Length: 213
View 1 (cartoon, rainbow, N blue to C red):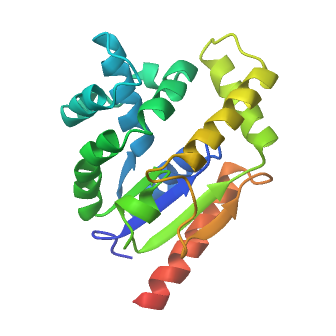
View 2 (cartoon, rainbow, N blue to C red):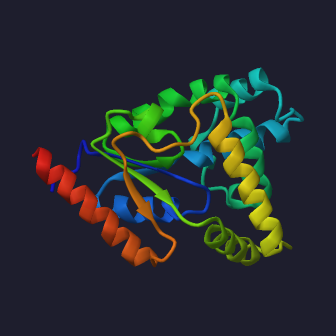
């Protein structure tokens, strides 16, 4: 399969496994991968670093317009604090608008993008759309293990509460709320290993691409 111009949109809930899935899928098809959540985390990081407020939409948008893509691999972006901060700046329409062009330029070259509004807003004409979800308790346990691995002092109960708060914020925001695209293929990873999830995702992708070839 020649995936040079293939665009795959992978949306889903927090800690559903969509990021790991997207990286593995990108590798399988020889495509670039963009974790769009890191863009919002980087905006929050840089905004806070210069003393700005997460509630200041215009200043956050200014930060978004000068985001340095070379800093997206900063390990600090994976922290629980940055995840929460990112969900707060992501509700601002000017921030989302500022990052939209960057995301579309990456996609145009052929890529796998994962986030919360890829199939609905960023790449509504993506070749394949997946929406990944898992039970809240399963997602909380995964995130708990991840944060413990980073050395953070967390509890499963605390992670679950934060996760539910984030789900509510993501799904209820006025601009680009988290929801499956009408033509997205749903993938529940509650009982799937990452290998099984990748296999299921690739089965869907292959079927869609072959049907339109």
